[in-house]
Length: 328
Image (cartoon, rainbow, N blue to C red; front, side):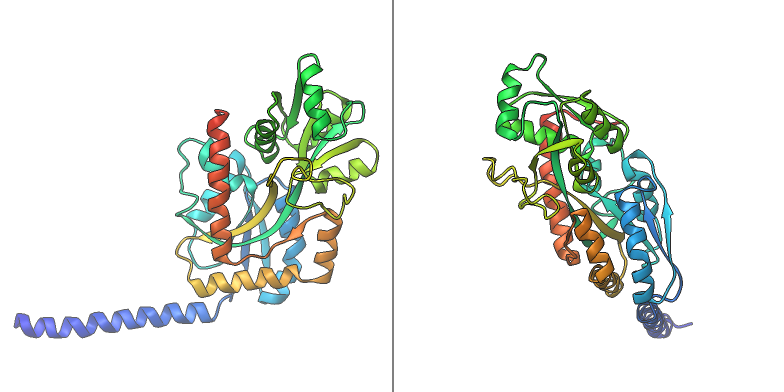
């Protein structure tokens, strides 16, 4: 066949294939969702992420018109589940719900099998969870100033428990001690529950955990709150001042829960998922539960969540480097 004639045939054929592919992708986007959607929880069953996913699932099903399946794939600080989603098809049917450790993991785990910021695309930050500095009732300190003074006189200094090395409570405490100019010894436990129990019993002096777990213990008289670490006071503890109010200017640390999907997921599908979560968070029953737990609804855009992740990563990278924190 004449090469020129052959080329003349091949060009329209390529164009037809491209148009066909584009039409197929457009149909896939416009019909989304048309089958069940999986939300992957990369952390423990019963934790903050799992609870959030199960709280929102019924409303998401109504909005999207499809079954929402919650699957837990815990391990290695959430990186096993995140890796699973990062390697899933970018079609909107596999969604990752993450905790604040997502922005920390690239800095504390060596040789992750995926790139947190290239292999996953941000959808939305759902909520912020206030972190509270709490102490056992026998500790002779009721605020950060008194804790600082106590650190100068207490034999063996102040120690703090956390839910594990690299956890939000651990890193928040490292940042707090730097800002207060004091030394504190880290005592890691396997989870926030044991860390809190250690502080209640007096085994450790303080711990930093989310309001959702600390508020019941504070109101029950088992713990006392020294400070809230976010920008503003939490409605569930209106009498407790923030670290900023106590002299640590612009100190702002909170836990959070967010949503991501595999990189390459079409933007219209990401927008549909973002809109569904935003609507679900407006559900009166959901909002009442959030208020009860002291959580602050955010419902950010994909761009806003992406910028927030970059800020979180940069903030914790410095804390991790300064304190030589590394996990296997």
